[in-house]
Length: 358
Image 1 (cartoon, rainbow, N blue to C red):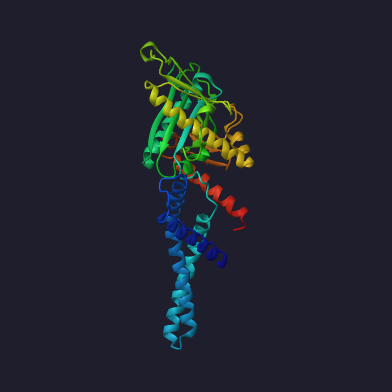
Image 2: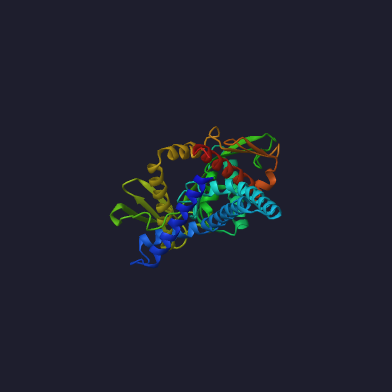
């Protein structure tokens, strides 16, 4: 436990150091000030719990010292009882503190850009992509997050060709980052007259939202084109040249937005471009994570799956952690998605603790 206490003391010292730096910072509002503010805010709840843990350890030391020094048998027994209770409480809290001390992904506290595209399966894949969108919307509502559509294109049967949304709130990326990958559905499509079960897929990508201080996009590095937006059906076609396409010349990344307001399109396209460039920079800084992400998102082929939604059996299986839940209705409705996310988070924490030898 001594090594854990030492780690706690390092974190508390860093928290106090940031507090002093912010109080005397020469440039409030600068990129450095913003970075320190974010780090401080992320550490606040952790430090609060850490100080509570440290108090338990201190109280235990006092109880042990009192028991050893006390001549009165009754008082010594009381001190020993208190020490036993404190040891049990500390043991229960110790694992929780180890999890808190795990290296934190700097993007965990950020908002997220969620992108969903149908893969193999034609119209049914588009309908399933729409179901996934509804699932995430409901889950976001339950967390008190804001769910804003950036860009959405529908197919002829009411499904999706593609959709991008911005989800903002507390620790959005931390909760949703394990949703990136190919989601597979097995069911009888509404478009199927013969009652046969079809297998379709949709890809989900979750990107941490980047801020301007994270990614510098130089004017000379982008090309902005305006064009006439197109929609599904005459009454939905935007007849003004409001659609915006931004090409990032150094990387070749292209982002298109085609809502009614050209100004809004440019703003949202830049937001998505920053997110993609930020994720690219994160991938380059961590080659192992980049390989994992490519393996998850893949091409949308049904064989590259991370999760299967089997409607005839009423089950959802996450193949990364061998989790199967017979709660498909609740999960696809968004109400039960938290159980899957919690299991993935717990597995990730356990794996990282094992790597650290904890």
